[in-house]
Image (tube, rainbow, N blue to C red):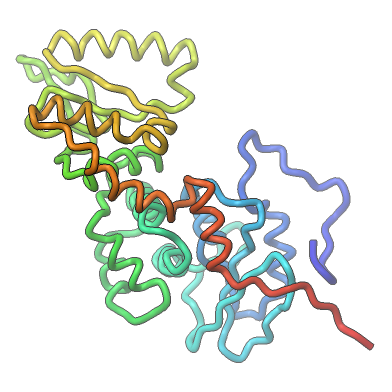
Length: 301
């Protein structure tokens, strides 16, 4: 794995969607830490079960060490020094920073879009509370400034990262939406729970992932669409390509439902945020440039 750290031959990742860091590999990296060191940032969040944005292959392992700990000068690892030991827990044998600590560490290197999406996911999974993050955001720690910028945009009701992005797109374009809104009929019976309701309209905006293309789900979706239509509402489904590359069409749909003039320039704020997001190639490149990664170094005689 790195100089002086090896794993058993034949060890492989068999998961359908392999994580960014295999836990067998993290067990090897853990050998480089002192007893107060721990994984932090995006690495810790993945161990905790928080879904991550698409990461570049060159993304390092994030490790937190005490101020006087020897820093491992290895390629593939980024270390941060701390005056006080980072609060951590043991998860499946791995020492990982607590979720509030890990989110703060990750925010140091991420854009606003990614930070909001991660916080939304952690709150939805009940791994952290908004109050905990507000306390830590008041400190002058690295990552605190980005955390403060992201918290006003956090909602915590999105059931996926892409739902967070779809909601944030609406918010940035000055479109008032209500996440996880319940549509009920005249008898009070639930018809559908929508990802987003465009407030004051009959429009429901939702993110359609790949699972919506599978036959059983597709049949159920069409039945649901008909029930929504009977109540006088229109459901609009959007893909990741719409959110990233065709955001102006989502804005146009919302403007039409709101009965206001379509102003495509409102989408520029969203495009500015996306340029710094891991969901775009430019954002992933900028992310790598921000992270100082130690070059490989071996002992010499």
